[in-house]
Length: 307
Ligand code: CP
Ligand code: NVA
Image (cartoon, rainbow, N blue to C red; front, side, top):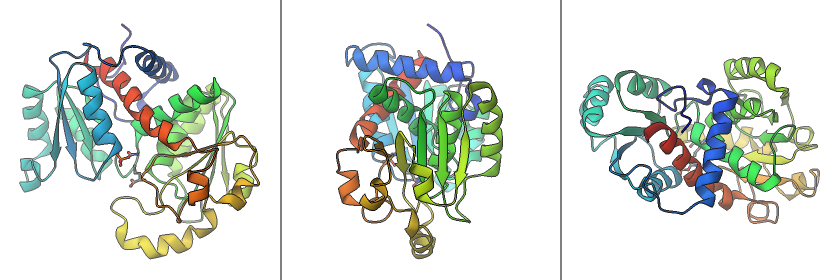
């Protein structure tokens, strides 16, 4: 079986276009194949969460079970990390017990440190900076719905956050164009854009910034949005809601898009803020298929890293 070059899934930035395709093909194979297999029989995954989660936690846990393995959940408060034990020591100790570590952390640096000191694969389950499993899974969903990726345009509107960072890094690796529209102060990281433009040179992707939602979504095959207030930003809630108001995905905006455009959201959604009920529950929305595919894609990642 082909493997990923690195032992970890830290960032899409560390994946080649070929490796992204490998993950997508594996996800398709696993989704079409029998639900329960023994690819990870006898293997154990430790899952560490510094933040809340529904999809990531449940899909990794069920995914491990379906692959014949076992997953354990720990909030950071359950572990001695919560009382000051270092990431260095935690990574070394866990590596003596388990075959893989998946972590959702505030700082991206924590994932890097875990990967540096762990001798088993480490998977990034979201940080303040990025959300690689989400974006890989989203590519799989788009591929499943539209039959290809190259040349398609994904338009992201709203906060230039962790989800957008991984989407930009993912789209440029498969030849998709990405448009994004965010207000001043909410743009994605310049570094992510710069590095992704380099990758885009070889895949033909375009990365385009817009200042308004209507221009960004005009030619979109997929419109994507995410919450205005990410985990850890609760204190900025009122300001963010005001600043991002013009970037709401609602039926007025949908009228300016292609009639068959797909609507995506990584969930959880704050209905009535970044997206309205009629759009998220409307005929263009594929958000629940998108959520389901987290599990198939992560099973592919687990299999490629741990079997
Ligand atoms: N999309 C996503 O990662 O959802 P959770 O926060 O519920 O895991
Ligand atoms: N941007 C969101 C994504 C949640 C899956 C957050 O970080 O809270």
